[in-house]
Image 1 (tube, each protein chain N blue to C red):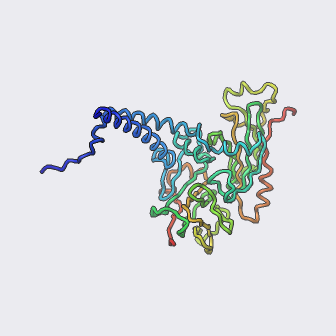
Image 2: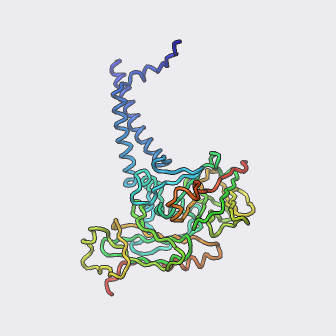
Image 3: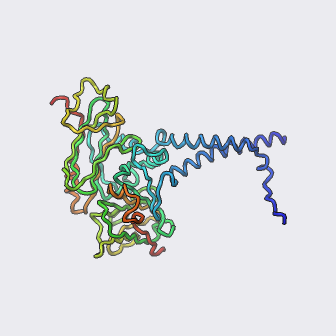
Length: 197
Length: 197
């Protein structure tokens, strides 16, 4: 029994195999380039969106997200947030926060969104957290000569980038706890390492 | 003329395949993910290396393009659902029951957004529940009702005639590290469609 042959349109039959093979090869290159380019060239990463709102090395209590007034998409509205845009190119930055209840987190992010350090609230652990962000790896050699280096008794966190974000998330336990949660969150701070000590 | 026509067809096919295929597949992998970068549990999808500095290029591009600031997935996992447990698209014209068994997760939160990550306007100003604010049934399980009009219990209002995206955040290092819980897949909530208008 002879099977019916599939008749393709004439213009498709004119496409040569070399064209298809070359196109597939170039498609792979375009695919890889486009994927790698998004974090570098994409218009809307979180750091770029928050950059104008946040002064350098200063903790800012962000307005609670409401419909039509969200700094970032997919941010839960049952939490309060504080953020700091740190810059350790000249000096270390001291970060301090109270992680009062389950769900509270203090996280450090690169401009591309990588989370290179996180501290969650945990039971049976001190809820007050203080550390100094310093340039990581061999960048420490270039640490400003005039700036005071962090002392040995301070907890240091190496940053892979000179500039990034500190984010403190404080989930609300209910509306009646809102003022208390806000007061605790406002204790979070972010400041350049003091040169006089 | 025939040669010129064939040449033009080959050029058009080359460009369409190379650019369309490269950009199209990159867009799909960055927006929807694949088994390479995501894990699917029922209607819930999580990007397995989100937030980590060693995240794969698709996860990094997804994070950047959507302006997300994920906590490292070694501590916190974020699950996104755009369909119910039967595969139907979540829509504000429908009512859903989200049923969660009693778990020992340290902290979790569940929030509803529109299709673009915006909070859904509602008079009750309620946008999310978390493990501290949700009401539990006597046996410990949780039922959250997603509906346009008020419902008894844990009512999460949706409206506005748009698609709905659910985001569940689980903060528990043991949960994040385990691929199974008590020998079974991780018990994520079921999303049952109750009715549609």
